[in-house]
Image 1 (cartoon, rainbow, N blue to C red):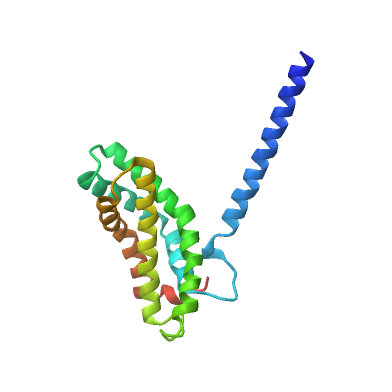
Image 2: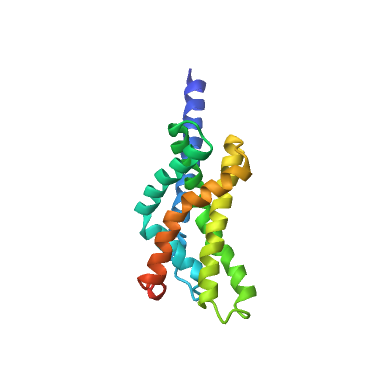
Length: 183
């Protein structure tokens, strides 16, 4: 019995150690949110990411809109459409927003000299467009991997479903002076 108790205590200690490591990774992930990054270099993708986090409630409304679009065009059950919308947006919103924001730095290294700087009108529009397409691409891939939905049907539906949240971001950045906000 003592060996069993020792084995159980050892297993519990290993589990707790793993749990603490997961907490450290989660904390590091949350601290590295691009919208709060203190950087010597600022690029338009940080503003787009910041708008995503500031207008989180629009994303929640967008989930229902996207679920409706998926229900209408692809998924017969509204419950499954809501689940699919939630899961693909969770993937896009956690992994995707970081990947897209930081990958746009490569875009600026190449295009800034041709487009008169990071904050030229062309780069602002291109950043939003590329991040929309990248976000929808991640969502489409997730739907393909998880549920085997055809890419040719899923991609246009998810573009339509994401127009609401990106429309709010465009309004914030262009109409309400979001490009001039201090991050």
